[in-house]
Image (cartoon, rainbow, N blue to C red; front, side):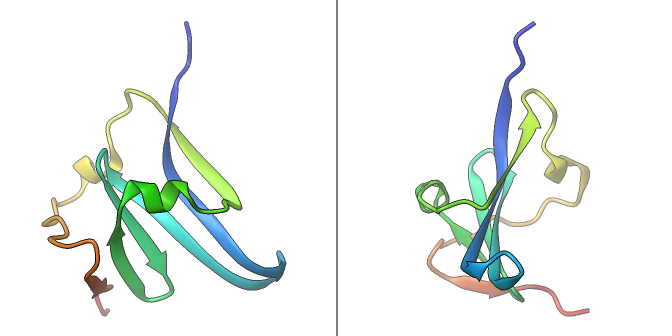
Length: 90
């Protein structure tokens, strides 16, 4: 049986060494929705922006496994990818 995987996260590192610099993560929350996690800011981004990154780490999930977002409360989708939204405060 042929195994297939889907990209669900991309980690990007900016800096001169792996031990120093800044990390940003792009997460796919459903088949067509990507989010950029940058410190305390979470923004919607287009898939093209994610795929154009110089990735440090790529994370894949086995195809045909339900998206993790189906196991949690459904959130309203981002209305405009250019508008940022802050993470919830605890």
